[in-house]
Image (cartoon, rainbow, N blue to C red; front, side, top):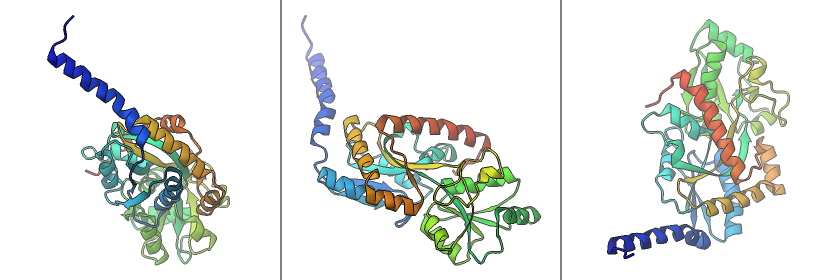
Length: 320
């Protein structure tokens, strides 16, 4: 059987495509890798990215560079990575907010299929905190004031579409109150204004060191069980059964990134998460390493994607 010139050329092109990914994986990394953090510097996500980057740079012999791209919740940074070349040289520090975006931004959202989960990092507790001088001594004080004067209590958080923002929204729904949302571009600016008395209450993940130092007062945590590093702080679920906003963070890559590259990154990230120095640092921050391998993290992400879509869809919150 004779092949036409077009068929012959097509077969060559297909062969080149098939062999391209292994070849790319074999030589990766041959230049610096960028980790995009969709928050301002100094917050928990930024600290986790830098902690991981330090290990990855040593493990792979190339710099892993942090690029902070805050704004629009996490949309700006996430879209930048989703549109990047899928060659393993651009990663996103992402997690639960990527799932939120698919419901909250109907037009501009990065879709599930645009980003591939690469490596698990941590599960995160959100803390409801107030200034120690605040008149609110407990969560019930906040609820009482909000029922008496709807909208009079501000609920600050680290960005529209983040777990902090949704914790405020879900608390309002569960308690039958109206909180005034105040969104910042990251956790540290949120904490700074809470320390300064500019907001009534905040929902942040970086609060534990401040609670330990008694510069912030913890009213509640958003996870279904109490945080082992702050066991005296009650959960919202104790007042509102079923309440659970447990966030997670990990690394993501543009869809189509070679699987072998993603597996290599995942393996080294897990080494970093078991390092004694890093474990001590995470304990200080009040976060828990996930320790999931590449396949388990992908399955967990899919499960969380389904769960949050079921929660958010009936709420009909849109940010477009």
